[in-house]
Length: 341
Image 1 (cartoon, rainbow, N blue to C red):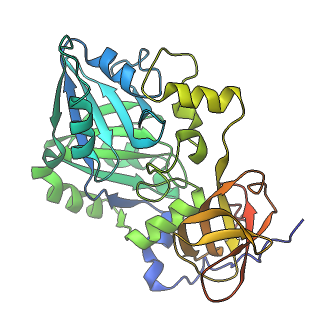
Image 2 (image 1 turned 180 degrees about the vertical axis):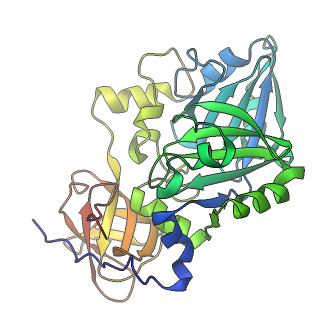
């Protein structure tokens, strides 16, 4: 077994460039979702329609709950990752950043003449902000007088004279939540969060936490190059529901053990970049780096899609095309971080 690279214990005294990262490890941070998408699917057949288009079983969806499902192509490639929650007369759908327009158009093309379904892109009308951090325990109750939602729970609250929808989600460190507010109230929300002690987290810090947690992202791992099972989205794929677009391919992957590649972590010697190929024994290309950062606590790490059986933890690979050979050791996700690091 290859020894892992030493952990860089830099939590104390992290550079000011990582202020948001350090704040997330001890307090509460907020991260506005740039180009976040929000669709509204209405009509009598809305639930049956989306059930036919995506991977998870939406029949158990009820008010106050959300279900995450994958929109896939006929070849089971990832088109979007959707968080769906029900209102009385519609389904609200959160899309991946930058995908709302594509997904709305894609779904409209799949409406049959007998379907009573309407699809609206309301993305500009809503601002989405993620709330993260180890200091979240009790924070929402203390600041807003409301218990935080459980993962996949949806609650509506009113704070400082405006309404917010709060979606419980796993978070990058501990369970967190996402706020949806009318865009006209976005500036007020930012001032309110700052007044309550929440710190804005910059994109570099957020991406470092994301890679450490092994969470796939749009444009990196969640792309049309991969199927849901290849990037760790098994929890959002039902193997018991009826037909949906891409089901046959996913069923074959499961029944015949045909998931040929997997999302893994990499410990590196030096920083790298997405798109760099990975080779086994310096010759055979077996994967590609999809996300790469220099973690304040772990040093250079990356996410990668790697072919079986080279995805096994401890496998030693090398990066190619960087002018010199660099070792990359496969490890499990999320990355292990020693207590106190």
